[in-house]
Image 1: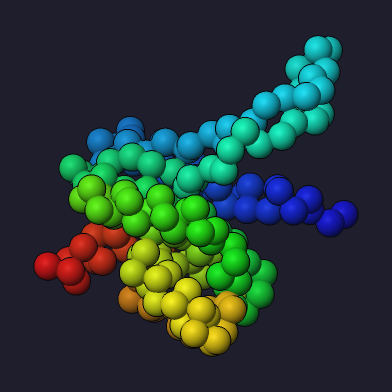
Image 2: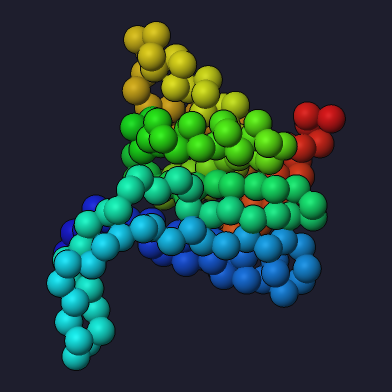
Length: 174
């Protein structure tokens, strides 16, 4: 059965959620999933499920928090393709991440290339570069090869250790 468009990435986000719980327990970070603001239209009282709803407003990013004193926000993206469609990162998300960075935070996305079984920590500056190239008439997607292999994220068991890539990125900026 085909997966509903809105449910893609749920397994990936579940792994990130477990990682965030582990980071919190170890005192490494406090990262929370940002709920998508919805207004329920139809609600089944017996099963306690929402069967119809609409989005109240555009969401910002999937996660926000702090890691070892560093404010961070990020979105989790997944693709089955051999490139990452830039349309998956919306203008309002780029604007939010830019505003977040202007206040001293670090903004990024985690991109899961399922075809390669590889996850990348992709800082906002790389996203800006990809999007600027697309706006100049270039590719509308970022090829797998364009992702910085040094910022790949280790996935061990159910853990997605993105803080290691975050630390590598911050070290490269200093």
